Image (cartoon, rainbow, N blue to C red; front, side):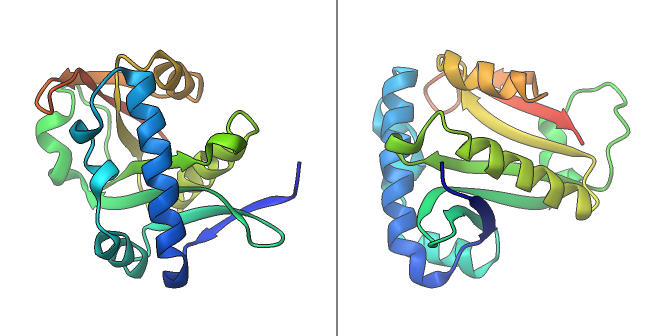
Length: 174
């Protein structure tokens, strides 16, 4: 296993990141038993990836030789943007929360801890940004991902079928 670290993505890496996300999301769709076109990331244009990189929300897990092994996005948002989806109970939310998305690892690098590096890095970044909670969505039919997130401290707080499949909103207190 090579040394791995996480850093902000570079604009020159946009095409590689786009390919990685598309491959990973195609696997996610297969594992979730949902059609590819239900997941917007499977058809996201290069310009959207470039804009996300320029906004500083795209991170990559890389080797010492700068080989990209995985990627994700972390959006720091005002709590009010998720207000409609948050539980009614008082959980002492800060004014900012984090949203984790586009979590992707090359198929041949899965189950080697790459995702753990990305998730841990994003949790630390969210804490440093003053976020009290991190959120994410995943297909509830994808038992592997549901179990992964729950093993890392996330709990399901709601679900909906608005995108054509049973999708859960998960939350973790940071």
